[in-house]
Image (cartoon, rainbow, N blue to C red; front, side, top):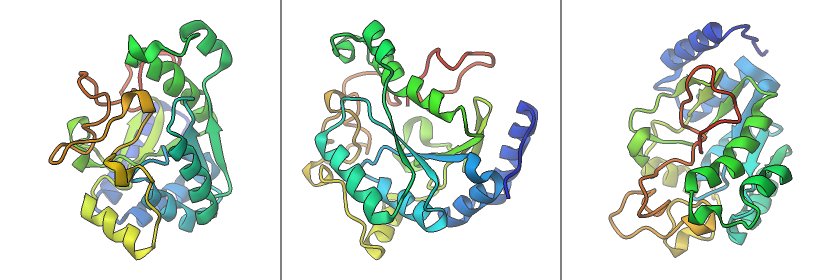
Length: 248
């Protein structure tokens, strides 16, 4: 049974309460609580990247028809597109939605598909933030695959948080790489094909490189730039419209 929250204050209070209840819970317990609280007003956002199979498998066991939002930026590796199709079919996820940038946004901001060369934040904004903002309009809460062991801004990641008027669940926040590897092995989950080529974190091909031995998991993302997030998980000031700022 889902619960509707009529105001930002109520939504924020719900996030605080849920975080207190779930901050040490198993990821499946967190997902079950999210589904119980929000039902069909809950979405899972997945990149179908290097570590995505674990969360997607748990979600498929809890609610196989959960809305899974996949950002097809137009610049993903071909291996990612193949993995998205094959993994969704294998796990029995029946409601995976491919989100693409709007034609008009690309025509205005990136007509030659070269924006990533000059302004990665703007490129992420038009190809990730805007499509996700539009899709999340029909949902009250969403699930991410972020984890604290990735470091950076994720070190203090709560299990449940309030952001941009919605409740965000981070079921894997407490898990480390060994936990993910153990779960994947136990359930015989297929790895993203680029993991074997040295990619521990996978985004768009122009801005993703293999990580060197001993480097941070996300070291290959926007390498050489002062950038660690695409903008989707960057908090916005109150009153900021959904079509301004941010990256995933």
